[in-house]
Image 1 (cartoon, helix red, strand yellow):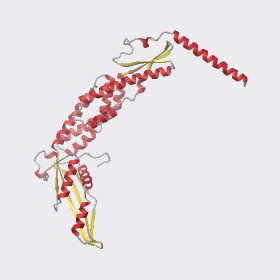
Image 2 (image 1 turned 135 degrees about the horizontal axis):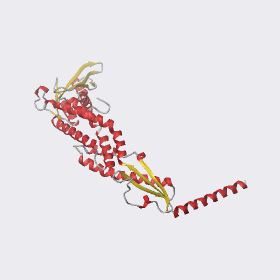
Image 3 (image 1 turned 90 degrees about the vertical axis):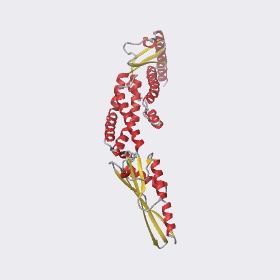
Length: 358
């Protein structure tokens, strides 16, 4: 045991001597040229590369880490500036919430593209130079977004064609599919701007198509109207609830006309017909009434048709049928009507389907 302890002490002493020798040698060496010169290196011109130098007194690995982190910090700074610039140039009528979504999606996660090209020891420290090839990184980002970009242009073309042919249902569906891809594509183009220092040609084509689609969508929205009416027995309270539900979906409500009576932009008009159904009878516990509402929606010029139905609501009274009826209709509240109205209009492609379907 004593011999082993002596051996370990000898090894430790040797290591200290070696470390001291290394420190002395590194201290004696001059600093590497790449760490001291501010001149543009012909091998890595700043027009094509992001270049940073890291240093560490601890280890070569730490110097490399510092260099890569500096390049990453450069990218983050450029992303911040390009995000503001992009959103300013390409607002296209986007809402504040969609701009926030773009900001949340804008980040660069390809640290593997940052390469260490030089390593050296001098002045008592370790040095490393890291570079990011802007063109190569942009090509990687372009490949990553290619599938979404192709899909966007296909949906966008379908939407624009549907608008020209006066097919509002098809337009709404294709537009929704195209716009679901916009935030992610915006974010990727911002990253590519930061890498290239300018907008790519694909960005110009995308922005042109995107803004044209948003313009047509805005024009269509300004003309869209839903004619709401009750078919059968008058039901003023039900009509009020239905009108409020349509407006909550962001749609204008017409003047209780039929599609045949619509003359102003009929291609963007739709009708929603509510048909109340009620059954009353005398049961063992007294008067009982059951009510429900069937809803039918359709575009006035082509497009889809959709139906929905509220759940059956029941009201009871020991002796008064009118009170039983009133109790049943009281259960047909705003929440019930909103759900049925939304389902009918979505299945008719008057409004966009939700994430879970129509």
